[in-house]
Image (cartoon, rainbow, N blue to C red; front, side, top):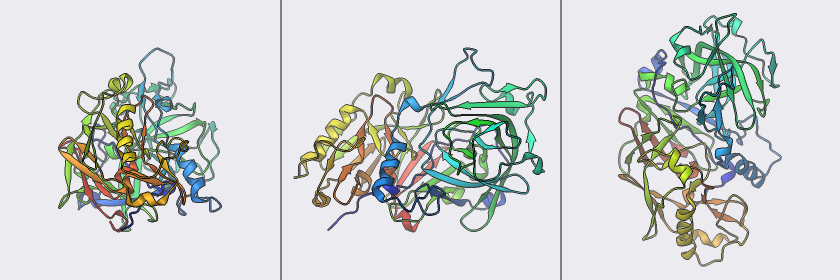
Length: 449
């Protein structure tokens, strides 16, 4: 029987890393009456403004790999507007911008297309008047036209509770400044306004008094087809954090494999993961890097062979919690392991495949074969988390680079954090219970979810 592999060029990402802190916004009727779901738009799908019909799957794959290679060198740093005062930075990491969200801001609602970023928290969009903005195709958001827009005052708890904001002495308005590892940046006013989401049922779900950034000075490597960033991280001002108890402390996603139209992000009662095949593991929160969820990975089995998790690098130890040792992140395509663990894992996989691997696999992939016959030889790999054994299919462990090249979807990190990426999560309903601090996995046909 043949097995199906992931085509990396259209892997669909989803959202992780949220917690309910601080600025709870008003609950919506749709959320409180049973939850809701919204769609995520993959940037390479025909529905995306980035879609280029002239590109073939191989070209899309190369672009995807260039976006999703994880590096701590590309960390985002949250800065005070005054800057240069020696105060500590809040360090967070951006995802690759592989998926987009449509949201609306203001009253009446104005739709924007934003990059869904699991590695940052603030929701921001470019606003009028813009003293120095990057070019965008859609009109700038005009806060003066929204009846629900309000700048946040410097003296308010919403401003003083945020890390390293600053104050405009003339207007007494709270200011923010984000600067990114690629030298991109956004500066503007901290404000509140109504955020409206379109659920898959056709209902709109409104969250009033949501804390946002209204950018008036934004430059760098932003794309003219998007209007800003939708922060979905762990911090108190991310979109999901601000939803508060209206979603019951639960969210989930089901990442559809190649060939499917969309993936879903679910909230509230729609985010329950239960039933036959469900396994659950605790997550840990790192107080020094609140954006991430850490799981405890004990090792793998390849067939019937045990592959333990080796001691992570010194830099990874500094970033990990006392128990958690791997970040679960849908904004990273591949799964990154410490070099020793990857070396033994890939050796066990290669020993079960009769064909010789490529001597020079395309970067960043590290174990590839120029033969489709390996589909029937792919060993079963199981990821053993604390209290949860997640049995992976070849869809989760191999990627189809072209018609003739197939590669292992695990790679060795360069001393950075270990990451459990989105290919490994494809065709699983992955649910987060923030009250009980658990993550659950259930094998699911996400194309029919």
